[in-house]
Each structure stands twice: as structure tokens, then as C-alpha cells.
Length: 277
Image 1 (cartoon, rainbow, N blue to C red):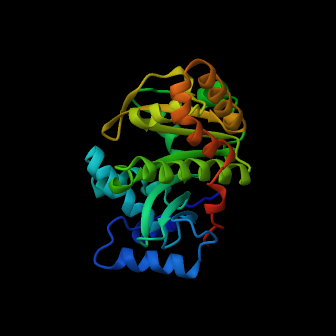
Image 2 (cartoon, helix red, strand yellow; image 1 turned 135 degrees about the horizontal axis):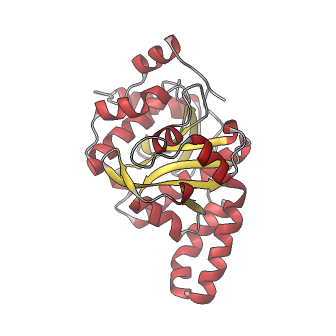
């Protein structure tokens, strides 16, 4: 568990950067790939980076770029929303080795003295779901075994092509699953927009609305608060693949490959890098 309040939080807020001007982002990317050489020659590789690392700013820059473009969120909004959770954040940063830049990011938030962002947010308006109710409904006995998916962002140029989009987003999904299990996590909570929700449902990722709640406006976008039980993820994805093969063969033809990648790690696990300190 990562904790931090008071002076530690103030220091993190001061040093966490979303705007990287000039050659700062390019220099950081080059340093990451040079100091932590990828163990795979594949174009896209994924690094787990603690929020206190300077390399986490590569992920923050992607968040600002993507959320600004898609949802109209600005720097002030992101700092207000995620500032209290910077020290408890771990970033999964997908790097494009060919272009030497970050392609996408997954921000996970660990339990801390500040709490988990999604649980804090659903306790307020409009859902008004107290943490005790959420924990009882979903069988969460230990918050230290919960990861909160704070953000998922892929740069526009990696979303335009089907192959690239799948490579980056599927690598992020698989990385989250693998690193969560390695860390001993059992539960995941998040609030995601309708597009990402549909994509996960299509792949059979077994998220359900927290306490059967309805979609709500969240940081300027229609979102749904979701819960997932991590030990079920692989079996549920594979179960959906079998159903599709029998009932909807065309859909299965399109989705079978991505499902194997996130459930079994085919072509993915070799791209997962050791944690960056």
C-alpha cells in the first residue's frame, strides 16, 4: 500500500507535471528506454512506473493530451481530480520503441490514507453510495487488495489504425491484469466512459455497475462506476469467447484474437517490463 499526506502530498503536487514543454518529453522518453532497456524487440512495450518517478510525467502528459482532446478537460481539472492521489498512483506506460515516445497510459490508484478515488467519488453526488455499502455489496474485506483504475488514455494516432489501437489498448489491459495479480490484488473499481465500457463488455471483461448503479456525469463525461473481481477475469473472457464462437461466429472471428491476448497474454506478456524504480 502507498500512503502519503501533508508535506509529502504537497511535494508530489509540486513535482507532478502534465505539461512537458520543449524537448522535455522526448528527453524523458529516451532516458527511460536507455536506462531501462526493453527486454523485447517488439515495437510497443509496457513499463510500470510509480507516481513518484519522474518518468510518470510521460503518462500524465498523455492523460492531459487525450482528456483535453476527447472530453475537454484542462490542466486545472486534472490536477484537482488526481492531485490527492499522485503518491498512490502507479502508471502503466506503453512506449513506442520506434518513435521513442509514450503511446498510452493506464493509471492505477492504490489504497492510501486518501482512500480510493472511485469509492470517494461514488459516495458523493449523484450516486451517494457509502463505502460501507459498496464493500458489503461486492464482498470487499480489505481495501489494500483493491486497485482503482484512475485513467486509461491512448494517443490519437494509435487509435486511428485498428492494428495499432489494439496493440496499445490490449497491451494496457493485459498489463493491468498481470501486474494486479502479481501485486496480490483481488478487486478493481473504476468509473469509465460509455465507449470504453462497451469495448470491455465486447471482450468479456466482467465488470458490473457498482451496487447496480446507473450511469452518471463524471469529470465532464457520461460514465459508469464499475466493479470487477480479478480472479474471474480470465475465465469470464474465455467463456464469452466460447459463447461467441457458437452463437455469433462473425463476432468471434473479429474478437477471438484480442480475447486471447488479454486472457492468455499471447503476444503480450513478452512486452511487459520490470517495474521502474
